[in-house]
Image 1: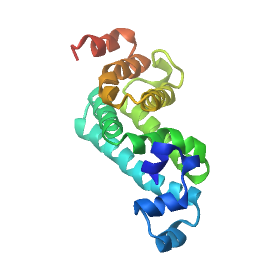
Image 2: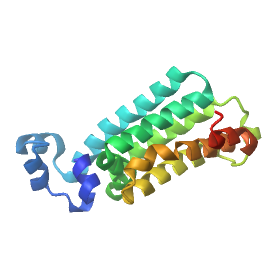
Image 3: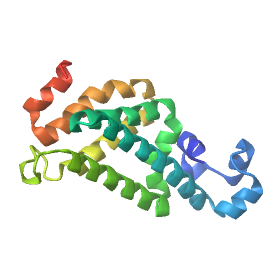
Image 4: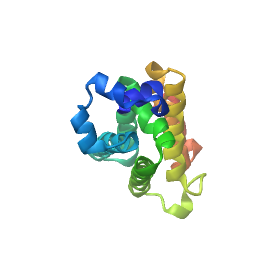
Amino acid sequence: MLELSGEIGYRAVTVEQLLDRGEVSAEQYERRCGDLESCFAAAYEAEAEALCAAMLAAAKEAGEWREGVRAALMTLLRFAAERPAVANALVREVHVVGGAALVKHEELLERLTVAIERGCDVPADELATVPRAPSFVVGAVEGVIAGRLVRGERDDLQAVAAELMYLIVASFLGAEEAASELDGTR
């Protein structure tokens, strides 16, 4: 469901296409989904939870805040480059579908926002440039990925890591601290 939605757009997906792809049998569809929105929501929840868990695990394994953010970001960018249709469904088509899938999307974005915020040692009142920096950076990263995917620029996704890390670090620690992200010294 996610791959098909990411390829042709959720509104163009039909039950027949799902069945033709062999993603579900007619019985499974009726038993597990019942309708396309529920089918998307179930697939979204499973895939998005797995991706979020992988990002958080990568961050935790890296240890230090900055390296953890980089590890989580690279996990996301690799996923989007390797599975662009699914990534497109996770960051763009979910907004078309709405409902339970969008509720889950917002929950996962909030989980990532909290993880970024908790991992940074800077007190909230001293964040460098943006009052709610974690929400801003999570939304900005999602927007960059969505834009690249819609333009078919999946091969360039990992190339934006330095710019995204600059944005993230600058939002928390200031532009001076973030400069090393762009000049390759970090």
